[in-house]
Image (tube, rainbow, N blue to C red; front, side, top):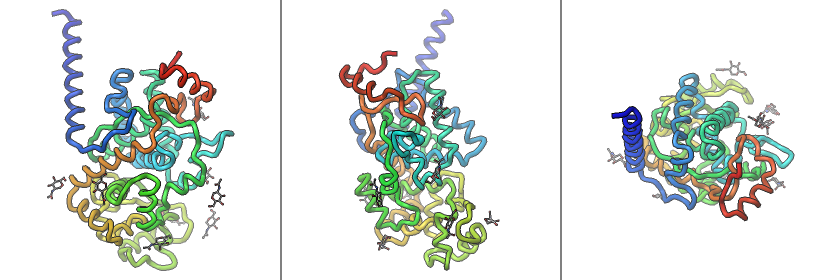
Length: 354
Ligand SMILES: *[C@@H]1O[C@H](CO)[C@@H](O)[C@H](O)[C@H]1NC(C)=O
Ligand SMILES: *[C@@H]1O[C@H](CO)[C@@H](O)[C@H](O)[C@H]1NC(C)=O
Ligand SMILES: *[C@@H]1O[C@H](CO)[C@@H](O)[C@H](O)[C@H]1NC(C)=O
Ligand SMILES: *[C@@H]1O[C@H](CO)[C@@H](O)[C@H](O)[C@H]1NC(C)=O
Ligand SMILES: *[C@@H]1O[C@H](CO)[C@@H](O)[C@H](O)[C@H]1NC(C)=O
Ligand SMILES: *[C@@H]1O[C@H](CO)[C@@H](O)[C@H](O)[C@H]1NC(C)=O
Ligand SMILES: *[C@@H]1O[C@H](CO)[C@@H](O)[C@H](O)[C@H]1NC(C)=O
Ligand SMILES: *[C@@H]1O[C@H](CO)[C@@H](O)[C@H](O)[C@H]1NC(C)=O
């Protein structure tokens, strides 16, 4: 048997194996229907190593600092909630308009997350060429952040393209409910802006099982007096971390297992140890309380609903086909884009001339 036959056979075997694994992962979870233009196999041929490039790199990043996982997860959330998952959250301010980064919620996003995404894009494009969007890379990075922190494994449908318009400051504020919001505000915002319901709200809030919050986001629950829905001991400890208004201190969102993606966040809420009003009020509100209890007692159920809602969220107002572009730099639009998109449309989809 020649060497090339052996390697060809093992290659075939390997690809059959990996196909098998990914089909199993798909079947193990329940997914919402895919929107037109996204698919499970979108980059299988033009960038077969896409997922391993991202996963291998992030494994190194998280070994250094697991805190980055929460930053990457939050980046995907913020991107999808404001004008859809089109990587507009990654655009830095330019003469063309204000960027999402310049609106207040940026304060809770870790700047490092932007750099990690751009580094991943660079690695992916070096190997495959400019075929994978920053929006797809952000969605895959969020998934890996979850898996590598102990959360559920799931597949991400791909084929998103990057937006060319900035979200305005007002649009950003309207779509990202503040951590001081109550459940009514959250439910209304998610229902009207994102077509997401109470189960989605509770499941997606489970992202707070990892990451940190700033004192300024919950100090209204500490001053001038304890929010009565907050546990007394939890309050005493938080007053130590945030001794006055306006400090720049931070604390963990899930006191039971701050860096592990699990269902302990819901146990925190049942013990009145949720950090933000937007967390704790879901246990006060009768429309969401039962869902919290069901996730607190059954992690499998939480993982199942989380994957479903993440996939739903990850498809919000995506740009597909010939809409949008594949950015060559995640933080800036491609130059001459107006001209390019005209050319692309008239050619009916033969994307790259170079
Ligand atoms: C974040 O937002 C604040 C206030 O809008 C702004 O001053 C700051 O420059 C922004 N930071 C980045 C990195 O964009
Ligand atoms: C943004 O919102 C503020 C306050 O709600 C409003 O006064 C302002 O006109 C809005 N700006 C734009 C461009 O819509
Ligand atoms: C929720 O917050 C909104 C806006 O602050 C307020 O109008 C509403 O009364 C609150 N609802 C409840 C049930 O507290
Ligand atoms: C939310 O929608 C999902 C389907 O997307 C459904 O299974 C679930 O029961 C709904 N939850 C509520 C509280 O209506
Ligand atoms: C929080 O901030 C205050 C004042 O900015 C500081 O004195 C205090 O040591 C900080 N506490 C913690 C736990 O970091
Ligand atoms: C908090 O600090 C900012 C500046 O960092 C200041 O504008 C604001 O007035 C302060 N708020 C309070 C309540 O001290
Ligand atoms: C937990 O949820 C899973 C998934 O819905 C379900 O199959 C299982 O029966 C539940 N376990 C218990 C103990 O209720
Ligand atoms: C990407 O764009 C940013 C913002 O203009 C710039 O600072 C950075 O150097 C660019 N990166 C590359 C690789 O060109």
